[in-house]
Image (tube, rainbow, N blue to C red; front, side, top):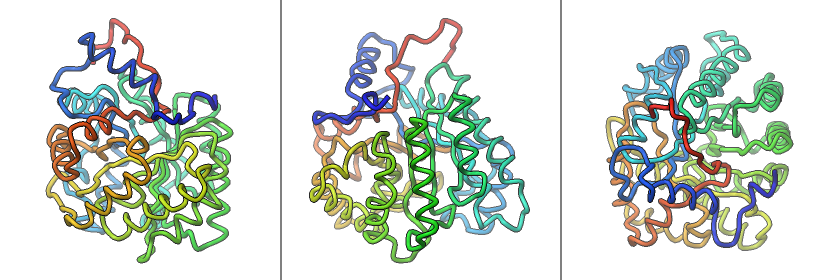
Length: 359
């Protein structure tokens, strides 16, 4: 299993990239114009009716800037996600469960049955991905501080159907400055690695000064427990955009990797909502100075360690999203094509879809 996840000096997911490009060359890609869009969207979400109901309550509390109103009201399906991929000519999507959401302290007053609702949401996402004939890759999720976290991960390790684990430390109100919470997170990473689960982790916490200090703790006290599997750092280390938190976090990664190349083993970054935060209702543009600093850090780390992603939720239009992201980053055509062709090592080599698959 570990060979499957090995990052080579020449890039990530090379066999998968070659197979996907071959499918495109053979005319096997989905409808739509591929153009400069990625082969894989590495960060997408759908919501069951219950998740959408609870999300609507949470969104009413945090407001429309942090939670665009469209996603607060609409359940969505794997078919919706595949249609978004088709419209943009993208082959594969990584579907990240929001099962962690039910364990958020923000919702504690709702007295939710966290284990049951987490299991139901994870089941919904896995089943929706299965129904789309290989176009979607399912990740289950937990709140790492919830009492059901280890049991839920172990359940899916035995049951199958999931490729990895999604963690959202901000939603879980995680604190890297708490040794007890760090130990709990390390145990989550250890179990995920034992089960050969890739990990996608949203590292930004609610700390107002989140940044290099927190990433140092992550790299020294948590990540080493999962060096045998891919660790995908969501939003280039923070929570979206290219602000001080993003630059501080990514700068610590760059420093650490240069000091200790072993720390970089199997770690890569998605660019979901980076450098601009693009919601269904508005675009929050990063400053030109911050974008320049972001690109400098990306180049220090190596563009091969960055994968394109959208944080898609219905009804975000991926064609426009990636056009905006390309314009904001303003890379050369060659560098953008490199980013668009990068594929995470957990993405399986595509196979011909069954004849009864319409999508």
